[in-house]
Each structure stands twice: as structure tokens, then as C-alpha cells.
Image 1 (cartoon, rainbow, N blue to C red):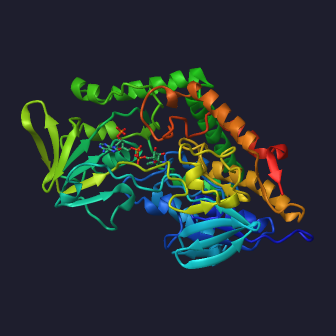
Image 2 (cartoon, rainbow, N blue to C red):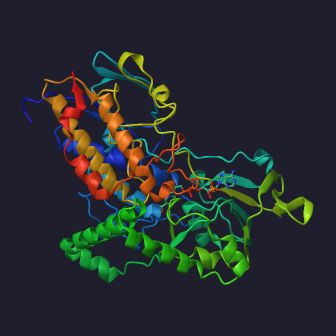
Image 3 (cartoon, protein in one colour):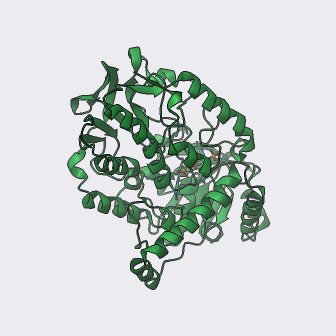
Length: 489
Ligand code: NAP
């Protein structure tokens, strides 16, 4: 590494992406790196989400960093706390915490004289040559705008703010929402609560996925033979990317048809025709983020469960009031606990940071009508600023760890050009971004996300917020930056 320029690098966020970036920057011979983390511990989404039933719905053996294979997952889909332990264990193994500044929320980043001048909630942090923003996509809880929410007398909280050691045993619990989170919670709590009222605004398609334990003998086989672990990784990743991810972007019609059939057959587990009808979506499979569950339909049919499909009119001290065709006052669902499984604002990437690029250009203003980034990683006029998880990143049903490593690899190749000393700043050409966005828009109609439903896959400007091509194309695009698409100064 001799002869290369030293760079001072700031990473935003000590989640799965930021930790990986720190490890890889050190390995690349870049030791002057600081992660600014607003919370007081690492782990990102796996730290924030602690609700009952939390599991990764990407099979665990495909959910790992390339440099840290893991033979120890307890289940086909690992419970959230195990994933958090995996991240903590890696942080300890690589001695990452010495470069993490907890309780330091990045507030401003301003590009002046070829460097990013950074302030955090702890004050002025000085100048950095490069910023890697790895602040996550789904971390701003979305609270429902329902009249009277603050009048509820019982306990209420968002699923990403689950109180520690909170018991639901014997309580009357209401859950608003029917996304992946609510579905996992329903299956996990049904046998301990007195009653569960699940408030559904829109039904969801659910792919059957039994989450079996991985037996100790199997784990021992992986321990003894790392090649076997790798084979499983390759097999599961291929299954995920070829049959699932390619299907939802219109690249594998047969696999898509199979997905549809699995979901429709799965729904037949619901025996009561009225309940089945109320659980049947009127949009295409995969339009909203497809849910995986092996216990939701069983849970919602239990005697202590009720699927409430009448609209919520308001929240009162005693519970949730819904409209009711038979009563002008509607119906009050009395509750002890109200859980808000209402999702996240996925379009607040980087918020509330104030980021000012060349000539004071503000990122929030640049993105006011649409969040756009060249290949999801870089932005014109915001030099030496790289994103992991930027707009149009492949999110959803891919392994995020793989995606993040690929995006980092792309960014590192560009960062290497800054180390030569011949280049002080780089950013994508505006026409490169335009061409990328035109291509996203042209591909959008092929994706099932654009087939007519409301979901966080669609931006506020009506365009697709995820990667509309195959994972193979993503890998190819991340392999080698096209240097002609960049301006170097
Ligand atoms: P979500 O998919 O955005 O679902 C939010 C739910 O809340 C929807 O059912 C929505 O109804 C409902 N809702 C929102 N506001 C409402 C209101 N005012 N009144 C009534 N209902 C309202 O959120 P999520 O379930 O937390 O999942 C978010 C994402 O996190 C997922 O898509 C996934 O990417 C990720 N996730 C992953 C896992 C995993 O295992 N890997 C687990 C959980 C979550 P509408 O559909 O009508 O809008």
C-alpha cells in the first residue's frame, strides 16, 4: 500500500453495512475510519427490532458476510437476536468498536475545499476525504395518523420500539397492520394472549415458509466441512435470486407462476370462506413485499384471534373503534395493548442529516421530487459521497448482506482512485444518472411492483424505489465502475 495517499473516512451507521465497510476499509489499508452511530450500540435494524417472532425471512445460510460464514444458525430462518449476536461477534473479532463513536448522530456534512466537513450531535468532527452513508433504508418508524392515538390508556408502541421485558401474557392485544412484521408477531403471540385483534387495511399474499430448526448434527457437519456450508450458501442464493428475485422483475415467468400458485394454495389453509375472502388480496402476488410465514393462517384461525377489516375510525382510551354496518356508533375493540405494526418511512434515506455538496447544493432539495442516485451509490455534485442502501438499491427479498458487500466493492474501486493522489474528487456525470433513471423507468412496467398496489417499493414520485433488474445484473454493474461515467477533479 506504500505510495498511496491516506484518506480520512467517515461512515454513517454501525448497522450490518457500516460494520462490513469498516472491516473492508481496514483490509484495503485504510485505517483512518470512524463510524458515527446515533444509538448507543451496534446492529442497526437488528438492534432496533426486538418484537416477538422477529426472524430474518431470507434463509440464514444465505444471510452472511462472505468473510464470515456461520455454521451456528439455529433455524432455517434465524431469529433476530441471533443475527444481532452474529454482528456483535464479528465486531468483537475484528475489534471494530475502537472506531465506532456511539451517541454521535451525523447532523451536517458540507463539501468544501475538497473535503466533507462533518458535525454530529457531539459537535464538530472535522474534515473527511470520503463519506460512506450506510444509515439503512427502514429505520424511521411510520406512525399512523389516526384520531385519538394519544388518548389510549393502555400500552402502545411501534414494533421497532418494543419495550424490553414486556409481557403480553393474558392481555387483550390489538395489532394495526398486516405486513411482514405484523404477520410474524401474530404467529408468535397468539398462544399467550387473551385475545388478538388484527386490524387489516389491505390483505397480503403469504408464501408458505416453515421455519424448522437446524439440527445439531447438521451444524456439526457444517463446522466439520466448510465446503458444505458454502455449497448451501450457493444453492440458497441461487434459489432466491433466480426463482424469486428474477420472477418479480418479469424475468422468470414460470417461477412467477409457481410463486402465485404457492401463495394461492397456501390461502386454502383458511377453512372459513368469509375469513378466506377477507384475507384474499385484490392485487398481484409480490406487488407488495411478499410475506413469508409458516404459521400466520393457523394463528389467525384460532379462537382468540379476530381479523378486523372494518375501517378504524378512531382510537379511544379503552381501545380501537371501527366502523360497523350494523351500528351508527361503530364497534369498540377493548384492548390492553395496541401495537403499531405500521412500517417505516423508506423514503427518508439520510434524513434528517443536512448534506451540502458542491456550491452548497442541498441533498434534501435535490431529492425533493425524487430520490435518485447513479447505480444507487453515487450522486452528481456530491463528490466522494458513497451510499450503501441508496435509492434503487436491491432491497426486499435479497440478502442485504450480499447487496451491501457488492455496493461497497463498487465504492472501494472509486475510492482507490482517490488514493492515487492524482484525483481529489469524483462524482457521477449528470447524464450518467439521467440514463440510469431512464432505464429504471423503462424497466418499471415489467416489475410486479408496478402492477397496481400501494407499497414502499414505489417512490413518492410514483417510480420504483427498488432495483428493477435481476440480481445478476446488479452483480455485473457493481463489479467494475465505468470510469467514463464519472467526473474527476
Ligand atoms: P409494512 O410492510 O410497510 O406494513 C405496514 C402495515 O401497516 C400495512 O399492512 C399497512 O396497510 C398498515 N398501515 C399503515 N398505516 C396504517 C393506518 N393508518 N391504518 C391501518 N393500517 C395501516 O411494514 P412492516 O411489516 O414493518 O415491514 C416493513 C418492511 O420491513 C418489510 O417490507 C420488509 O422489507 C422488512 N421486514 C423484514 C422482515 C424479515 O423477516 N426480513 C420482517 C419484518 C419486516 P396498507 O398495506 O394498507 O398500507
